[in-house]
Length: 137
Image (cartoon, rainbow, N blue to C red):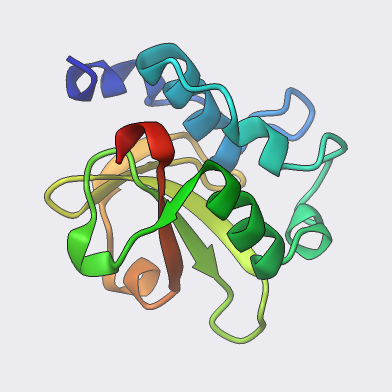
C-alpha cells in the first residue's frame, strides 16, 4: 500500500547540492510509488539555493498544474494531493508538501530532514492551493 511506503521517504536531508528539496521528494514519491513522472518538470533544473522561489511564480505553478491535473478545494483534499504554500507577506511560493489524511503532509524543509507530520496552523495559514494529478482524479 502506498501510504505504508511513506516511511521510505522520512529522514532524508535537504540538499541543494544533491538536488533534494521539497518538490523533488514529492517527485520521487510520485515516481516510485504511483508511477507518475511529471512533477520534476515544474522545478527549474538549476536550483542551487532558496532563490528558486523567486524564479517560479504562483501563476507558473497554476499553469503547470492545469496541464497535469486539477486544482482541489481544501475541503476535498485526498492522499497524495500536492499543497503549495506561499509567503504570508509576499506573493511567491515558499514550499511544497504532499497531503495525507487526516491533515498531515510529507515535506522537506530547507536545512532539515524530510518528515511526515500534522499540518500546523502556521503552515495552514500559508496554503495557497492544492493540486491533484489527473491520474488520481
